Structures are given as structure tokens and as C-alpha cells.
Length: 359
Image 1 (cartoon, rainbow, N blue to C red):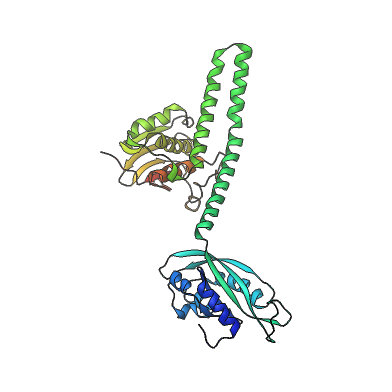
Image 2 (cartoon, rainbow, N blue to C red):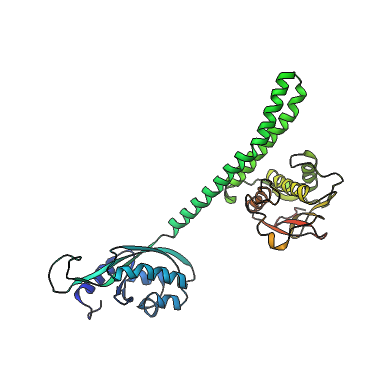
């Protein structure tokens, strides 16, 4: 307790000492003149940082950046000027152990009666002589809010994706069902069935995108990469290869993976090559000591654009913009990483780094 402080400040210090949250007292010049034990315990800062000009000392030591210091000053000044009775500011601090914490600081004015009267704290003879800051850890709350915002954004994109991309196969299916009904030609049902299969695939992709990678169930088994790639190529589920295109499976595995998820990833990568690798491309699939790769000899992607192509909704040709995002999510669910680069033939290469052959 500061014995030289005025009675109002000593009273504030006694209250701050008893609080379970980290707290402190500022004087009128923004000097922290008192901090409680809880603030010392949480921050692991010494008095050389905790006391003195605030936030200048914290900024000078690197625990706040300049912009954080400005945010604090913007909240503190109206309180110290007697213009606000309550200011709250959210700040991110690097603690003494190097970790970071997000806190909400509530600042309220500390006043004293100039004439010694017993009038209330907001009476005409009161003067603001400082402020009390109470700090609450909101790291978990902020992370929940951020996660909710990310989820909402992802759901909005998925809703837009489904509402846009389901329309075409639905129209196709309805059209051929109508023709089959009108003509009694059952062969008309085949393209309708294909359209329904496409709808099912779109829904499966949306479900993958809706979940966090950690929540995607992965059932590992030894997957024959040659058979898997050939099935993706021949099934038509991921589009039709351009005329003259060739598939070369250089090192077929097997690899430890979830068969269904890996099929979707490999299929989307082949479909990407079908769409972008040009006429008669050679598409190579294999696994080596750096993971599974799918590479072509097409025009590739400029280095400065590679970081964007896995973003959900990003497409260079008006497509769905979901294919590479799905591949990245499948990789993350396995504990792998998707790496985009240039193939040995100067084209596009996608690599699932971390995938391993089982032999």
C-alpha cells in the first residue's frame, strides 16, 4: 500500500488488492502507481514494467506493439479527462513466458472530493485523479467468437456453392425425367442418374468443407494408388480427360490413407488437370519420400498466385472454386499438408506432403 497516496487512492488500492482479476491504479498522468498480486502472477512481469508510465513501458519492452498502446491510450484518456465513466478495451499481450493472452480492460475514473465533503463521486466538487483498470482474460471467448465467425463464413460460402452449383444438375435430372415420362424411353434415365450422382458428390464435398479437419473421420488402410488413380480417371466422376490425355502412375504405392477421402482428393486434382492442363496433357501420379503428387505438363500457375488457389471459392475460370480447397482439407484431416508448385515438366504440381507408402 502506498502510504504517501491520498485517501481516495489508498482506498482504491485496497479494493484492487482484493480483486480476483488482475487490476491496477493509474494516476492522472497515466502512471501505474499500484498493481495487485494477481496481475503480477499472471503476467510474470516485475515492477520495472508494471509500474511507471503506461502503456509506454509495456510497449518499450515489446509486450505490446504500438497499435495496442494507442488503443489503450484512446480508452484511458476520456476516463482521465472526466469525459467517460466506463471504457472497455480489448488488448492482446505477450506475457513473460512468451505466450499471448487476449484481455478486456475496464477503466473507471478514480475521484476525490476537493472540499472534503461527503457528496457522491460525481458531485460538482469532485475531481478525477486517476483511474482503476480491471483486467479479465477473454482469450477463450475471443477464440470462440473467431471460430463462430469462421464457421458462419464457411457455411455462407457452402450455402452459396450449393445453391449455385446444384441448380444445373437438378435441371438436367428434371429435364431427362420429364423426357422419360413423356416418351417412355428409359434410356433417358441414364443422364438423369448421372446428374443425381453429381448432386451426391457436391453434397459430399460440402460436408467435407463444413467440418473442421480434426472432426473429419479418417479410416486408414493400405490404398493401391495405381488402382485409385485409374478409377478416378475412368469413372467420369471428376470430369472427362481431354482427348489425347494420358495418365502415368509412376510409383503406385500403396499408401496409408482413408480410401474415400483420398479418392476425392486425387479425383479433384485430376479434374483440375483436365480443366487447366491444356490439350493432350500427360498427368503423372505417384508417391515418393515427400508424399503423394499429381503433376501435369500444362501451363502451370504463376508463383505469386499459388497461395490463393486453395481458398474456398477461388477459381480462375468461373468454376466452383472448391476442388483444391477440398484437397487441402483432406490433407489436413490426415495430418498432411498440401503444397502447390511447379512440376518437372513446367506445369502444375500438387503434393500431399506427409503421405507415406506402406511398403
